[in-house]
Image (cartoon, rainbow, N blue to C red; front, side, top):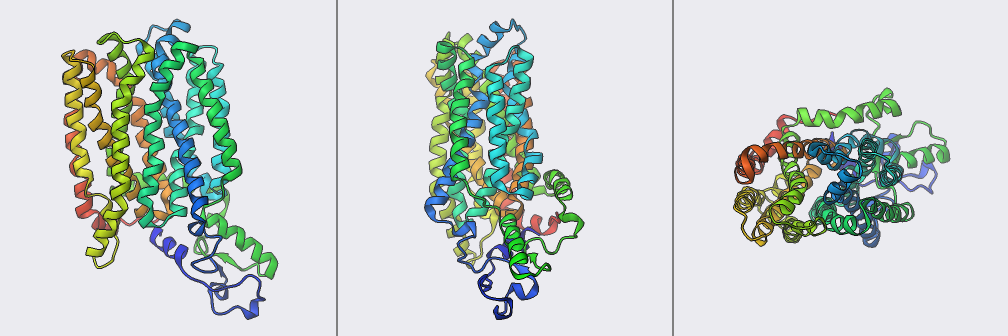
Length: 498
């Protein structure tokens, strides 16, 4: 179904809206179908001016960065929150950080299908307002229970950019341009959690932990306002449905059908049925497509590791190295530098690699061409975990554990961006749903895995605790290689009918 829709999105038709119906040349309209006027139709988001694409991609990426930043900006201030609310439970303190990610896991399951009913514009902007409203609630939280509840709801609203952002990229960019676009977008997803603790430590120590939330609220409101002004609808099916309704009225032809949805049953076109189908679609893709399942498991494991580090780096550097809470944010610079180097490498090589491999394949592009370098990036993850674990276990100079996290950040970006682009290329018509399933599982790991961290490190120590995680990371290294070798065969054998 996804491949058919992709063909519909690029097919050339010649109808002209200003001509009477009897003067239309042979086109989709003669078959009662409404599509784009031509491959160069200005209404097609893939033909938007480069400047508009850049502004929209930049704003969505920036808002994604802010919502991701909100997930971790709280981490360095947790000792202050515990003191404020008389909380002695380390588990509950960690949950106040990771519950935001639990909201990230729940939100995409219904935000994604809503965007496929009503369009990206209204759903994305409404969710951003929801995020800002409950971030305000976090800043005013009267007790720890209320704070945790507000953090969860803010996470639900903040998840919109995580799932709809990739859909916007699929809407606006052809396959040969998506690698660089996803690299830019991924900066927000992965740099936000890094910037959070760096900013949060200084803000919490100097102005109080509530100002962590006030800062997020101010920036979030500014970006939400900018998206209301500069955002445009990009979802092809919704744009063509609007055009279909307009032509039905203008041409007095109630039989006209949207070319992207004409083959669906009438019952399936009702909003309730579409929403019902859309909510279950990410779960179906997770359970019925080995590609979605294995990509999601790998990325979820890595995301869980990232948030496990976020919730444990602060106490490690306070207890082992005697740092003040405001300084612990600097310990995340290793991951940040690794991410920066990784994103630069991916942006430079991703699209160039698929163009080169497509030429070798007689000009035929396959989504699996995104994956060859992922094996190299995967090797960096366990190396980083072994290095970090034993340097902190042995109380080496603080510079060594920070440096040990550079390969982790580099490898994380080198796996995250290609696998996410691969998912978009495999399921272009349902990119938002594919990423929703991936995001839900990824964020579930991100919310729950850190809760096991304190117990694991207490039992095994930092050295063996991180080594166990490193051995698990080794087990995932072959996943991209297997998908590169057998992915096409798997896609054909387990083709999804959604």
